[in-house]
Length: 345
Image (cartoon, rainbow, N blue to C red; front, side, top):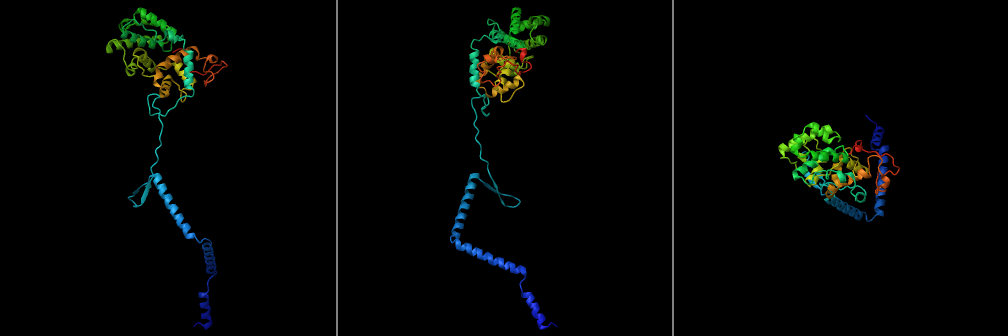
């Protein structure tokens, strides 16, 4: 049996708060005092909270409208997911450059001024291409199909060959009789003697015979009137095909790019990035150069390359573009140029 004093002690221990409880009570009392003090200092607290809620609601509405949100429930949770639509970006296109109006406009710096300067330097039209190029090597008295055939052959011979050499070979061929029928009947040895010393003359003898046979069998002695079929002929590449279309058919199908055009276009930085082959240069030029300049550009740059912007030791001091050409070198040092640039066209 517990004594009265023992029971009293037990009751005292049970009802007496612990140190932690006392500390909590003190902290609670202080918190209440702080809240009361804040309320006393801000009598308009409820009004401020109301305004804050109103502004928050307006902000959420504005954000929702700006992003054009669209809510949809998920199958797994039934919750609402918010999908935002990205704003579309308007891209300006150039409708006049090249052939693809969907490509973003890019053009080289100062290209119009550079082009006009080249025109000025070429106004005398006294370069080899002006006097002996493919546009001058045919017999104007011949029938139209024969003229077109002679244009094709002159371009075939001009590859890797100077215009002077090509013109001499064409003169001998015309004296022999430069028509599809005559070339088909001429033996290879005779053809080789007629076109020597054009570059790769042995291969070109084969190409001439094969082309002539195809033209006789499939085109009734004429030549194809499109680039697709022209490049199928032996020895005919894209440059020759586009020039043939321009000279023989008076149709602009693309830019004829030889080593001169390839070299000068890169020296003038008319390419977005340096190109390694004439075909890459053709694609690059056609990407931005206005189409009404495609026919002129080959003739301009070939003659300019023959007389001024030569493969080795270009005459920069005589060039009207010397102050605006990125590659201008007035010290007459050797410029970097494609490896085959000094082998003619």
